[in-house]
Amino acid sequence: MSYTRVSFLIAPLDPWRDILMIELGELGYDSFEETTGGLDAYVPDDRFSVPALSGLLTLRDPHVSISWGVSKLEDRNWNAEWESSFQPVEVGQEVRIRAEHHPSAAGFTHEIIITPRMAFGTGHHATTRMVVRAMLGLQATGGAFADGLNGKAVCDLGCGTAVLAILAERMGARTIRAIDIDEQAVINARENVERNGCDRTTVEKGVATALEGRSYDLILANIERNTLLDAMGLMAAAMRPGAALFLSGFIVADRPLLAAAAQAHGLELAEHLEEGEWSLLGCRKRLVE
Image (cartoon, rainbow, N blue to C red):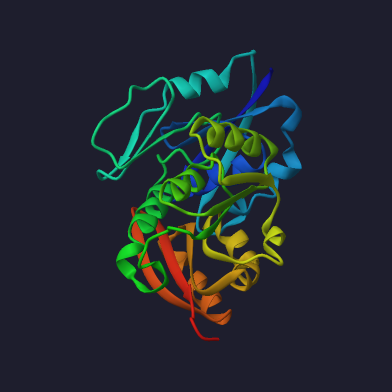
């Protein structure tokens, strides 16, 4: 497959390089290389579009300066090269996320095998790690989660590799629904669900409107800020009394915006986490409406 490389110069780098990667991933860019002062992003030739690139929100944000140039590359197996550099991720002693070619390691409560194939959600990004931490801490919050995720209905919206959905099943969730807008992510998520022996997790292609008419005890939404804002009403409506919602994929400076939107839809603010420039916001739906 022939690829196009788009080289970006970004000032300031943080957190805009990470935000740009998320937006590019939604356009079909499937591999990235951090460079001094910027980012090289790679996309199959047939998915490269100048109008789509020019429409990215990050490129129009007044708080960052971004310039870019385009070059063509010879055929290479980019997925194979990227996968070979994937290293295990550990979150305390509870969760270890590894590729199939890595040896198993003793001492972890949950070990998850992920073949990334460029889908977001390997555990390497701060937002994924924070959602894992929030999930692990749910039981300590008591209330509807006094027994953790045992018997709960969970939705992973924007599931990527389905690593969070797989963890939810390992933690005892009764039903898990994983949803992603990207067809390749859906294919990859289904592979990972099968690889990890999950039989209570379903994966489907869709957007936030897929939540309509459904109800959940926990919704995981590790997406980007504007999608979270647009979907807030749908997510709130799909939460059972006492349910939890974990939002991530946005920077610390945007947390007040997400918090206000959540409260406007009747949700109560619970925990928040930070890692570098990235943030997580946990919300709850009142037990009595």
